[in-house]
Length: 181
Image 1 (cartoon, helix red, strand yellow):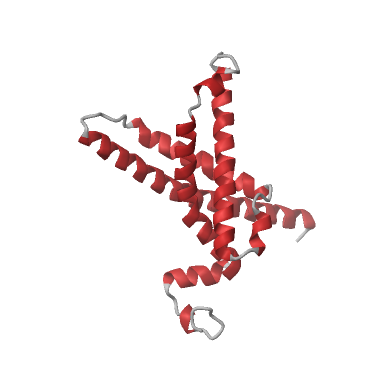
Image 2 (cartoon, rainbow, N blue to C red):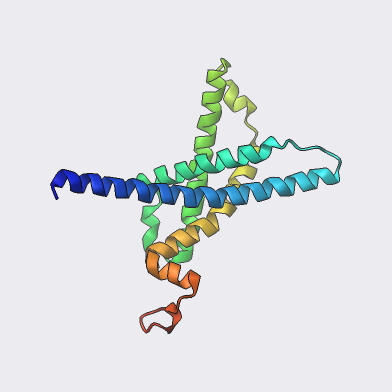
């Protein structure tokens, strides 16, 4: 096998790995955001307010965008400095950092949308509401805690051991297992 074939093979493997990572993150976020939309719809229905069915579509698109933002952040090594801390601190700090990163991307997205629509640049800050931004950041942060907990556990334990633990395939019986101690 030539070095060019090895590079293509490793490139194809890397692309496959990144796609799998992206879809795992995206499906998790889709589930979370669609559940939030369903809750909001049911809550508004209680007060006879009809909610737009397009909100599910927006939830899916947001999950896809945020999934890509997470992967870009990880490629840029955002949050890597927290990996030497205790696991709970690493999870919470990465959740905070990535929630802020997503918030920055949201503001950038709003800026681009307004500029494309031909509105003045200054209208972005005028039309952003602090309550909306804080609410969005809080929801994203809460969604990120379990996501980064699993990602950090996978990093610390290793992918095979974590998946074996989740499937319950006798890992607790293994002598080197932290669960079996």
